[in-house]
Length: 496
Image (tube, rainbow, N blue to C red):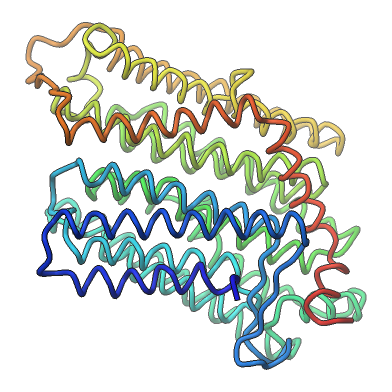
């Protein structure tokens, strides 16, 4: 069944990549890109089907839910499958032109497919234990990728990354164990059914808190975000770009999925908790970003800041706010990935990631400057670019819910985000090349051209989100409506 395809396809290409170790580099790269294209095709097919059919459900081994392994695809998971597959495909194209850190090797290709398999599994997991399993599959690949190259600075960043994610896994599996002892099920549809059947009499505070700790680290939300900027700037740039656009979004997706299912109408505690987390995450991340001059660290702190907007949608928990959060996830994934790709192109031109030592890009490479300008404004949320629509829906949802403090936080963080993007623009693009800079002459040959092509693809996607915003917002609205229709989710999976 096609629901299993997002897991099976990457697994097949893991085996193919490793089996072609003695083949020519061209054959290896063709297989690598073929795997990415196939995965994108499968994800788009699933998205089209769930838009027409609502849900796709598969039970492994013919064991009916809630006793077997359930795989579920709805509009939200279809969006995330398509989004991450596209991101992985573009970054894969970019990585083949990077020509550093031995990226064009079968092991690297297999690790990328392993990462994708773990993310895809998390998006379609229908029970919490299998969500945990796919998290671990994803993390095993990411542990190796973040240390790829074995430089001293990478080992330091890897240690923080591995330690914090192992801690988060401990909290997550502990929460799962306590939840099972309290409710007697880990199937998410069955869990939602029992929570509603008990009508608030189940005490799920302890397992929810433990699971939230696990999600908090994986999503890099306040106060557990420090590992991200300390580790994301250390691996090869293509790995950093891939992580920036995908990994934390898996945590955010899982958080929205889980808490929307156990959320009861009128439960103020979770809404206020998530709104507090959202505002503190936004503010702390952007304040740290404004003080950075290493462009990868600056952009990494912005990942933290913008996670807050996504959590804000969960805190408001209205159809409009969830629509805005999902749309914001889409735009952020594309734009943030592209900003990292552009920072890598800037590094190839100037030989540095340090903004103080950079400069002259607007004068010498105006096309690259245009690509950055569009992406930066989209990140800030300047209308009519894609980032505006997600923020607008979140802010409107906050106003309608009378959460004015959090609305003010979201607006203030947008201005500080603009300040950070202007800093990059002024330092790397607008000012002249510093006299002590060792600027390299960027040759648009066969390999370097792929770096620019990858960025152009993501800018085209960003503009497509802008001009096709009505179509995308309608899809996000469908996803939000399904998240709120818990009875429909239960009925499809459990036939109750």
